[in-house]
Image 1 (cartoon, rainbow over the protein chains, first blue to last red):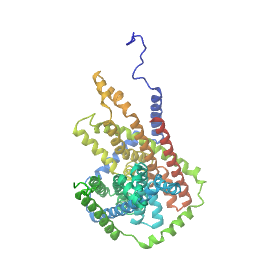
Image 2 (tube, chains in turn cyan, orange):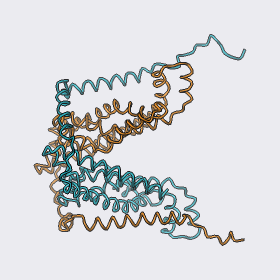
Image 3 (cartoon, rainbow over the protein chains, first blue to last red):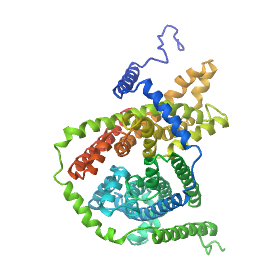
Image 4 (spheres, one colour):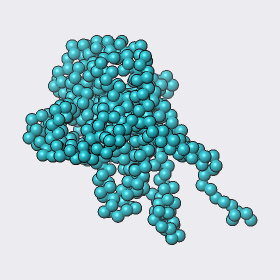
Length: 264
Length: 265
């Protein structure tokens, strides 16, 4: 008799997963142990909350009276972001092409890929420290840092995008007898250019964010102003700087949305 | 028959003009910036020499310093990254639920969630660290909280998007049985977002390992403190061992993440 056998044993559809529970238990133990290791007590948290209230209270009327200092830092940050993004995008265009394994022989793509991976490994702040040592304090160190950061991001994703293209169009252009440059320009670039613009605008955004930060280690821009305001406990000025940074980043996101919609 | 002569163009005139306008603005902004930025040319010419000097000072890397200070600081850095990622979840999961339109469909909750997510992402982790150092004093706690607050925006946004993409079929089925809100969440949504959840958390942990390595520069614990101290004392051979340790841990973190992801997904 076909159909349902009422005697057949049916397991609970929502079976208990003992392995998952054990892993969660380990995670909880780890968190509890770490909180003890950091000797975090309620007293300390209470004290911290008091400090936080005090800090926020001192921030509250943001102090824009030193607007000229703020403006010069802001302009320097913008300049660092613009120069670094444009140089970085330009270099990444070539590096990405050289790193794509379906375009280049192995002996070119492997060293270029290694170089790109090296650019990605270190946090921008660490690269900034090394550049501050080698080119001195100021905007130049910031520009070089952000160029390195841009190459690590754009060139990697661009190379991956090129490796995913359809080779049919490349064949078609090659069949017309086109040279190498023409193949790149008329069969590869049209397939990946929109994505390249996407990566570039994203990196422009993140360069804008990072340009307000590299100043903390002396590489120019608004970060230096912020750091010295922190060290002098000028919390109302800190609040003003933070507001300006957030406004700048939102403006950058707005601009990159426009650029992205133009190139869609 | 004029179709043969028809001249094909990939873009309309408006598209072309707006693209050229973008290029023009970029070029103008670039040259304007180059002209007004304060770069001292002597420093640029001097750079290769200074760089060679720095690397020559780094050269006999001070491996003996590793067991003295670097090892403990590296463990601390890993703990900051891990604990920060776990604490993020406490804030990010409710915000993700508030931001997902298939769970709470009120515009108010979306706006509140989005405000917190955006402000968490806009402030850099070093700035978060500065804030927490001035609240809790220098130490590991400031680093953990800086990592946690910085990651909320990232984890919350991606988790919210993952929740919005679930298949509503099984949710409907659970609702039809009269399951409570909590049961629907745990038995309906959770199994579907599980792979996305773990890949988001692992990805953020990988980023956090990199970020926690520099938090010490503003006094928030970890390897950054050792790095900062050796740099202030111009002990470049010790800077080199710290950088090498960071390099190793970052590569190791990436390998671990790739291995776990392969097994889970």
